[in-house]
Length: 508
Figure 1: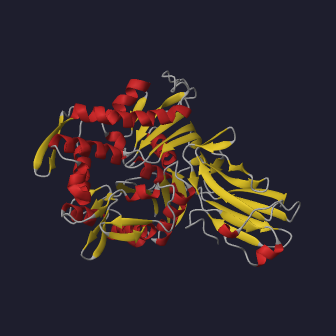
Figure 2 (figure 1 turned 180 degrees about the vertical axis):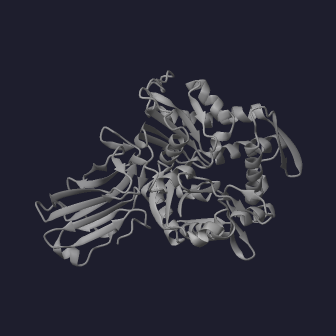
Figure 3 (figure 1 turned 60 degrees about the vertical axis):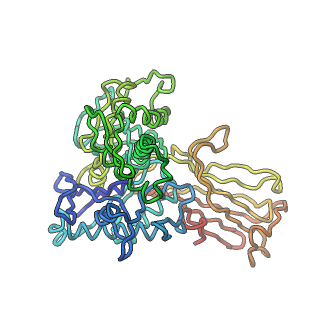
């Protein structure tokens, strides 16, 4: 069986390929109730960490939780050494992710609508997703967690790219010859992404992607919780960490019940019943929605000037659980008019698209873009200045299943090569700007004596030596957007290989 798994900030949704159809998998909780998701939740209980619906029950009982596990991945410093708190205990982030995904696999096999089918048709391939703006470390950790949990991952797609498949499958022939482009607006629980996709029949080509790593439903929950605290006359800190997390959970549930005609929201804050006017809540949330609209400026001509040009765009397609908040489509329609469409499955659109991508019979093809640039700062002029070299441009085209390799060769001019690798959102005058993710420095000795016993970074004084050994740098960008680096001294054979995303850009 082929699956698409959308590991979301709030919920994990699974869809599967079934003879040209892509239904969403249902899960049964401990009360026998059916849900088309598993909560992406981890909690501490007497027996250790619990996940999914059990974690939701533990949270309701006042046990400490790790809310928004996926948001921990969005940190610029996320790596295999990253740790998270669940209550007063610390855990390796990767271990927590593996534990949760093991739970997902167990629930699929025992408490899901496809559990009987898996007995005769086991999971043969899984396509997973990451935010389009995810850095190499986030991609590596996601892929590694799925693999350690026993899922046979065959591909990793950017979330809005997957949602574009769902749009085309559901509305075959909708983009016209004149308007063959679609903007996928993906507002999830923890992140915002948007992609401009050119569609021709079942062939999709991503023309550009943007993203905000910390903008999503969690932020809308926090706005509501803080408004409730203000009306109750208390500070959020007065609730304590666990009490505030409980209020955030209540705020999330109340937010998800809002309809266009809703006028008030009722919450309990320290035994007080608080009524938050919906109009006040929307007014407080408007800057968050405006932030997402502003981020799309590079995808829609004229948007920055307030006059978006939609002449070549079939529409804006709203997906992601947070896009269900009535305020979001309302504000987008005020800016873009009637060409704003919300998926009937906003929380499941990505999973359905992933299932389509997992199906070798679907006929869909995708050409995506890296969306984040990668480069290196090098020592120049005997260490007197730094020179930046962009290796992979952020608009580099990638096809599913395809890898990219770039090499650099030169004669060493210093005794030491000191490489400072980064990912970046954009370039200005040849220098990286915007959302920059640094990796640990890589030190490479260019002299025979230093190669025999490589020195520590803080013990090295960079000096110019004149023409030295022939050095080759090899940069590999795999189909999942994960970067690895090999540096080789071709005269001596000395080599270092590094995987970006492992702890400290670990040497392999």
